[in-house]
Length: 88
Length: 162
Image (cartoon, rainbow over all chains, first blue to last red; front, side):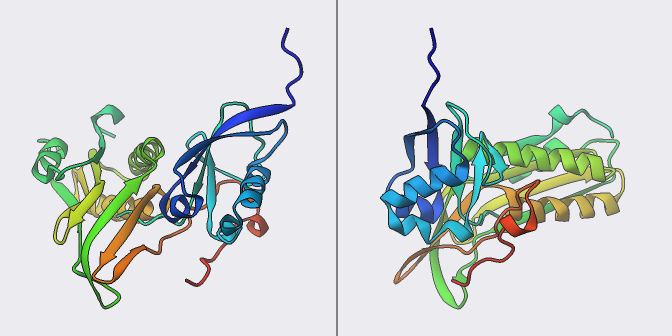
């Protein structure tokens, strides 16, 4: 019954200064099946050019774990883009 | 060693951290020492007078990362109990933003573990601090957490100048 999915939906979170740049804290994104964290970010940066400038100073997480940019995404993943952390 | 991991306390709190409660929690008759770290809000940053700070966190991940730190302390050091608490929201000058207490039978392990805990927290726990000054607010410069399993070429090793 389930056809081959062409796209998947993931939850995207922004924090710190990146939340200000993105203009929101959370959104739901549809990406191509096979997309990676990197390609998701590229899609978002296409929509909001300001974001691209921050790419070198970000790390990403997938489902609450730090993740490499080439990590493939699965449906319903929670992806977050994290500026340098400054707790303490 | 000693008590099971569930005896550790890891907290994100919206109000004042119960410093005495956390110290009492880690203290036990088989211990001989408690080392604590009390991080609180300084009244200036790079020569500018700070009015107050505002902390936010990726809460679910921050708690998980703080629990990982507690687990690492148990692997690395001969300690008894660990308590780690970080406050979120608006903090005034002098208020405690982070508090860590480590108990151990002997002081050396407690000192080493407490130092490791705060250093690791500052590098790996997704919490961010916004500094409010008389003439505006800025997100504090921070540290980029290391990504496990990435090749050096794919991992930025230095913060961009800001």
